[in-house]
Image (tube, rainbow, N blue to C red; front, side):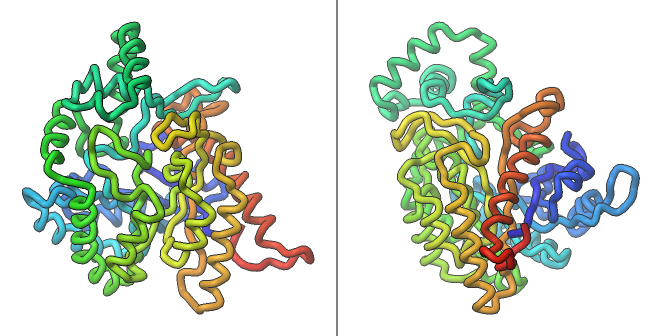
Amino acid sequence: MRRTWRWFGPQDRVTVDDMLQASVEGVVSALHHVPTGAVWSAEEIAKRQADIACMKDGTSSGLAWEVVESLPVSEDIKKQNGAWREHIEAYKTSLANLAAAGIEVICYNFMPVLDWTRTDLAWRLPTGGTCMRFDMVDFAAFDLHILKRDGARGDFPETVAAEADARFATMSEDRKKQLATNVVFGLPGAAEHMTLEMVGTHLAEYDRISPEALRQHLIDFLSEIVPTAERLGLRMCCHPDDPPFGLLGLPRVMSTEADYRQVLDAVPSAANGVTLCSGSLGARPDNDLPGMMERLGDRVHFLHLRNVKRETQAQRGSFHEAEHLGGDTDMVALIAAALAEEGKRRAAGRADISIPFRPDHGQDIMDDLGRQAQPGYPAIGRMKGLAELRGIVTALSHDRYGATRGGTA
């Protein structure tokens, strides 16, 4: 299992020096400043590679850009309207430019309108640290009273809607603004940022798109893209919905093992694979993460290892991002399943034996609290998570005689 680290580029408060000191082997990055639907040029890709290759003092970091996260799929492609065909051609050109630069793993998602959704980006923990949280009552208050979406009340249990009404009635104006900002939060340096008006426009356009239609749009996209990826030697891997249940009346099609199986079977190529995110999928109690790794493992090209603590056992419920070994997912069992998959690949003579993983998200602790890095991506909190994950990998990668079975720790 290869240790990687997400980096948002030169504006990231966590530097190349920081991740090198955290014992990272490879870097996960993207060109967030390039508008969605536009081509990632060879020049821009080379610039990001050069940024990663150097420490602050100009000496070599020894690190390389190994995984793309994410090469974004436009809303036009997801909805199959507007310039969607032109965007697919631009996507193919970007893939060719990435392959020419030596990058082989491409993570993307097919979530409509919003990427991951949280109601709190710095929820205070009893330890004094902070984490990201999804509170279903706060989200209902946003949907019902800030966005004021038609039909929203019918999407929540009566008890949740009533609690949301009461909470909103006592919510300060500052909290209302912060809640709206949190829900539509975007990545740093992104070329586009959602406003409430933009969200409303997209929601209206999705009224005609059922989950079945959106799944077919994903399959259509992959049917176009995967032959190019195969020819270029690339591995595409779809990130799950986050959270893995319906929000804002939007269709969700990558939330469960069954969702993944339909899409993998529809486009049966090794180039069509999975980003197994234990935090996203783990927010839903009926997702069996170690089992998914065992059953989908031959198509898993990238791992996001983080943990969430579900605050209810409802399928659609509140949760917060826990310590990497402290949530509801059995991280030891999941990593054991990943190492077993690597063993199968080694026996089969596959070239992609080592599955890249990154310590996804992290709690803000110690000096993180003053650094104000991208929410979910602190330096120390992620380093702590990586150390814990590395300990599991090391322990499981040695038999009782101390002989390494494979994989790097």
